[in-house]
Image (tube, rainbow, N blue to C red):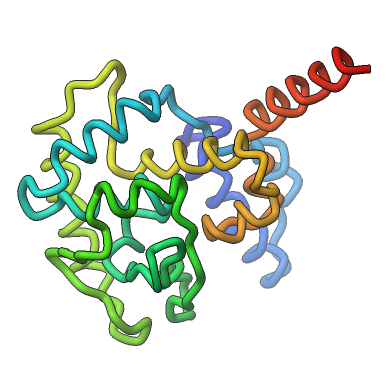
Length: 225
């Protein structure tokens, strides 16, 4: 079964993890065979549009249809698509309360997202919350309803997007994460927490961007010595 999935893919990684756990629990043979086909999964960051493209699109379509606010919120707060339905800006919009990703056996828990850049909060009218679907409590989270809205959201985006590269709503948060890496006021740990990542996942997913930032910073230091 594991060999029917793509090497290095998330499905193979998750299948092998669960199969090994079950084999150990039931004291079954074959664990070594699973380990041979268990390839490490590393999240891949697709080619993304520029921030300027994203900001211009969000501004143009902010009040266009039922998902204009949701797209703008994804761009500014960097949350997952399934989380945007629970997102509520707090205070002046510099932060927002959001219910984090639902895990099996656990209701979503609140975390704090950060606006980046902050000036878009006013430009995109984000304090005027307009959602087609609301999640206000983790106990009431409906995965099927959220998926249905997300599918419609992506169709809304594909109908309007004509940028320099392909874009799906779920990939908008990659741009926020990379933006945070190159902002000198952000630490990687804080950015990871705001995005709802573990630091390990954050640094492995965005390793190329982090390395580029660190090399550029070192080059500046060397020029100034």
